Length: 137
Ligand code: NI
Image (cartoon, rainbow, N blue to C red; front, side):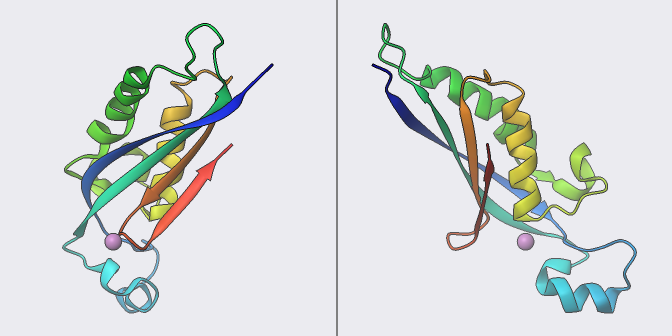
């Protein structure tokens, strides 16, 4: 009998960003992005929740070794983004606005490359306690 289950692991990082469209003038950016368009940047305490879904291994009783998942999240997301200026220091955001939506997608793509395709992966990223985005398979 196959048992499909979801396992969750949380992570955390702090990062700075500015939301704006390079081709727009300051007024237009101010109108659309408000305070997030601050040219001196601002920071957030991001929380990430990673959800893996698949079948429980009948021998180990586990979906995945959580230590292994913890290490992948640490290397691909936490250490990669933590204490960075996302616009200036993270390759993926050189030409991509670092919104909660886009950081969520990039986090998913970085994690997806390191995880076996037998797992379904979903990523939820909280920019504040009230604002989050979710992306995945
Ligand atoms: Ni912001």
